[in-house]
Image (cartoon, rainbow, N blue to C red; front, side, top):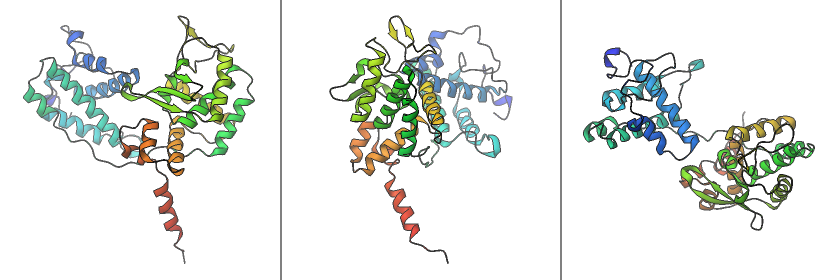
Length: 334
């Protein structure tokens, strides 16, 4: 905000107001409505950053908890949008991508919706405050295709590791490569989600939507080998393993890893193999591209990866990119 005179009443200061009622805090009510811990973490970060913009806080102490979100009006929300778009990061590049700005705006609209639902804000004020255009943009999917040789080298690195982690990581890489599942989906898999007779895995995706994915015969062989080591203890399919080679357990069940732990396995095994660095999302990108290259129709690919729109799946299609490159290759530099 350019001036403290334009800061809504009650937004200054880094502490909670004395009259704070957590049960009627729109910030808390909105976050409680979200299904996954990852979504809550992401949107909490967005709301906290917005709160610091409104409160003009440079210390990072302000959060969105206990703030009078219902006092935001159209002029304030427009200023928030402008601030998010105008902030610059290192090297003069925008601090937030268009997609990131839009995610912040979604969080803002949703917390104001809770203000209206809690009868803290009139319908008219709410409608005006959320009348914000999303930032338009077109971006290619991030990441790179994973060459077969890189995956082969990473699997070989797992095979030379005779500890339980070697079997687990080989199975995990196989599942990532042949299902295109997101890292959070892999982390959430339980032993009971695997049906060896069908070579299928029940995956819980965004918004708690379930779908079946399938592994190849080779990946199933590695997965079966890991389960033989893992045993039939209920809980996570790919639990964290201690330095002593034991799966971590809590209340009689193997504990689930985090999505970051899944990314750590990918980074570590590729580094051991001397292969270029890749992310779990690169496995997803490669899976979709390979499906479409093999002639699988777009609707089937969309269902396998859990995209809500076929347009999202189409962004990973390498064929138009290849055709454009071949078109350029017809030219000759004099």
